Length: 81
Length: 140
Image 1: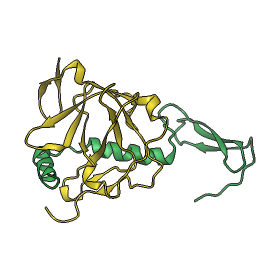
Image 2: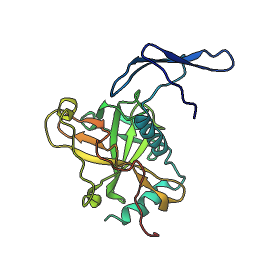
Image 3: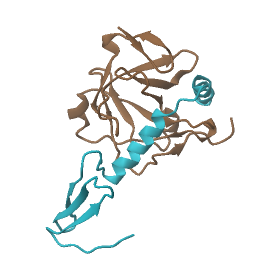
Image 4: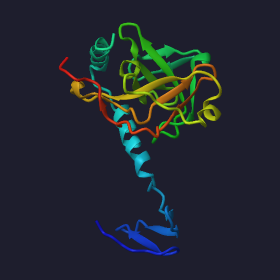
């Protein structure tokens, strides 16, 4: 992990190779919490990590599509009748 | 009106059965209209949450009542502003892999439905519940 010290109003740049633009993360305010400003080119989504973990779980849930899903769900439901 | 579904072909869904996500599923912000599909062979412990905007988008929900000895979601005070007044029905999302014994449910961020307003929200609870809780303890 790269560790960088920054003050308020300073920023870091994450360069995306291939001329796809850069991501800038700026420290707006410091204190017991910090405020960040993030600028990223189109096609890059910025998430709070704890939300992103739910995004990943939801995507996984949406892919619960086995050929025999009905059978699988039926077996699961037997456990909870 | 007839809608195409992922797992049940084309089925008739009444306007009065359409659910609208007032606060969408995380990562599925463009999908708001869904319907619950029950299967009489399955019973009511598991239900399909079918998107009415994309036939290929469908989730399986689990009624967490059997987990109530330790799963006691505390609703945020602002939920009433999102879903309207009333009682809410809680479901959790299932992730069912090829090996169904490894099925997990998301207890961190359940889905709450207000049957009166037919509004729905996925809420990330402050409580420290797992995003991937194994549903099955022993072989089935």
